[in-house]
Length: 163
Image (cartoon, rainbow, N blue to C red; front, side):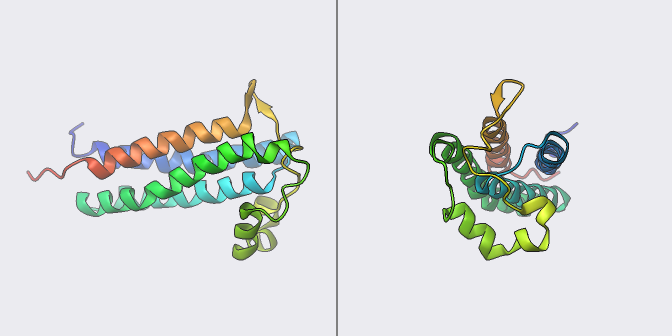
């Protein structure tokens, strides 16, 4: 594989991983009764947007346009990482996480009423603090947001090579 195709491949893999992570979260919710809190839902939303923008970036024929999409997507990865950290260190320590930034974003988008099976808040942050394979669920999310940030940064900084 040429270096020219590497950013496209990484962006494709990132898009599939982000969208796949939402599938895993939905499976955990509906099969294992791991009900989501507002911060979980916010992270789902960010993974969907990141996944779609990564796939868009991979589909673009121009390396320059791909770099721009990657650079503009970096704040989404950073915001997702911040949401995961906030969920673990702050929100999970409280009995109520109502009326937080996550609630406001969810309410503003109205996705919870349009698609309740995916975006409806069903637990408090303390109740949603669960582990998957011994690791807090939000740390899995944090790891994927960090990986997304690395892929996006690498793509944004990869110079175009003309043949």
